[in-house]
Image (tube, rainbow, N blue to C red; front, side, top):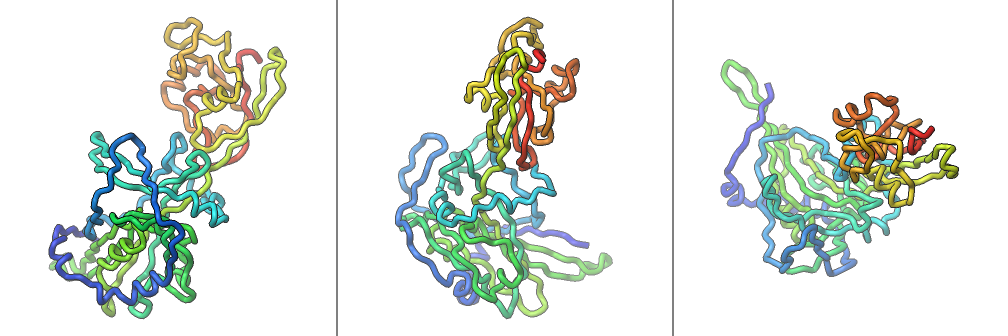
Length: 374
């Protein structure tokens, strides 16, 4: 039987520093670095004061969960990524691009979701790129204490400890290289956790495994603050104990690209054309900004049964299109859209409710506009 325990003894943990135990780990983990830029720009998602405040990184937290769940992709319409999608094809090979794209964003407090103000990694070119989350688990060794990861501060030099620190390489023969970890140059470490499993007797239940997770947050920290946070973690295990290091990595990837072959009804006498959209783009909006005419005069509103454009409210059918090929690249229909189009062909979609790149897939589509005129 496996259980997971929790503890609120943070003060007790803080009173027992492990810096001297962790020093060999740091020597390998933080073998080298360089300063490329001594300023970090903090961008606000919504306008509010960005006056620098003294920064104190949180102490390691004791978590009750060791279940690894994939982080959602942070843009609209793509849904959960497909298990067969090879995300590595969206990696960016040019390290120069990665280093110039990293930015730190201030995310304001969200009262509805009860989340505090925080600072998160982002990208300059958010239309074509996104920040993905990678979970890496490493078996901790008593012989090889360090991770074997080289770090480099690319933005920092602030008095509050904020900055951006990325992976600059792997130590030859280190744990990450030896265990073939999915760690790339240009990645940034968001957090490091130590998962300690202990086995004890539990009366009639027999042996019981107890797992405790201690986490140090390192996202958007400069080099020195990153070192300080990691050094506060527990020391390597004694012989016979199992310990896992869990790294939450942030990686810049390109968004999937969808090519759409647009066909017009013969009566419009318009030549077929191609447009390219990035995953998460709305089909109607993307076509309108490119000058594509969508308001079908033969369409009737679903609510009033009269003509008129509802302006992407999902109440009319003037933006309906026929998806001839590549329908799997769109998000699934919801019940309201299905009801509105139930008298039409199954290939029809309301373009105002259609987002491309579903499941983080890319490819080609063929779409016919104004399908009632065909």
